[in-house]
Image (cartoon, rainbow, N blue to C red; front, side):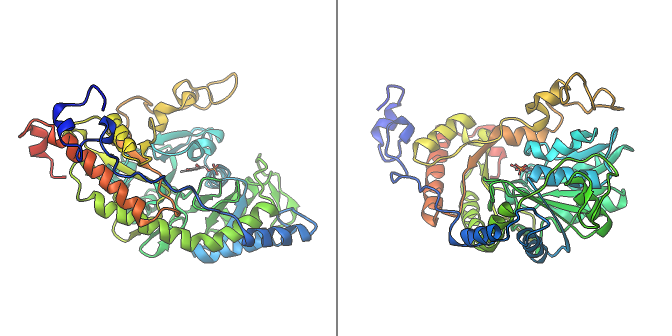
Length: 435
Ligand SMILES: Cc1ncc(COP(=O)(O)O)c(C=O)c1O
């Protein structure tokens, strides 16, 4: 038992934290990830190779992938591309975003959300998140709209749908294009509709870490036939593969997918319903247990939402727990649960190229030319900063069982009880908080 252990902890070994030498809440090893790729992927890959072409418009796999995605998502037009970042960039370009424009998005996300915005010479503007749902809201977006706002990119963080209906209404009213970043939200739904089907565009990632994967890949979905063509051009050097000409109406990168990626993605789409259901069930079980632990806040999902938890964020209230987040995380890890601190900073503080205006060589473009650069400083999105400071990242995946979730709850409950029992009784924070 370590020297810093109190006499009380030594005297009650069953309640002592594993961090202090007590027994662990979970002693068995954490399960490894199971196989993701198998017979179905091989079958589609063999068929792709047998076509004697791997070009995405010459073979059948990409066409089948797009048709299947359209059916699942309930949106008629699908543009295939090489990554989620490429999908968002193509959508941003198709929305008419250009130099001097502003695009409002979430401060907790991946670099791929804003990459296309900055490449098009526009300025990313960050709206604050809902403090329990971790997504931007109609209210927080409205506060950031200026005459230069062209589009909004909503991120469905961790597979939890944002509250889309008020956001759609706001964007309609203010004539803004709406892009949904669904990179982390495969299979997530709101009132029975897939995320990605609410906005002008929905963008999905097939990178190796997502619910489903083909190594790397991306899909853009839209109902708008004119913008569909524009997004397709934006993802393929402005070659008009739909019309069969070289359009060259604007400059665009090569963001093409290949038939090999599409073959794997097609098989993975077949597995998605099972994967999404499993992640949903495990996440809901965790949420139900967390609700009963004081000082801990589960991920809030809006009414009618169906979350497919790419990961699970557990928010702590240090004032109620009487301990800082890093120590709490270490104590839960010592109990045998692989939680960790997740995002370190909101995007506007984390990215040196935003801080230093160094996105492009030899230039402060596009920030130097902007009408107003938003204040990428502490305090810009207070909810996001608080959530990031207080959140634990739980690596939820479809290979876990109810046992792992229950052990996680037991460990968190034990650590929470331990630190709360050591707080001075009747402290202000405990009286105030209703968690
Ligand atoms: C929210 C979000 N948006 C965009 C991306 C970019 O996707 P990709 O890595 O496929 O470019 C990611 C990837 O991690 C993501 O999580």
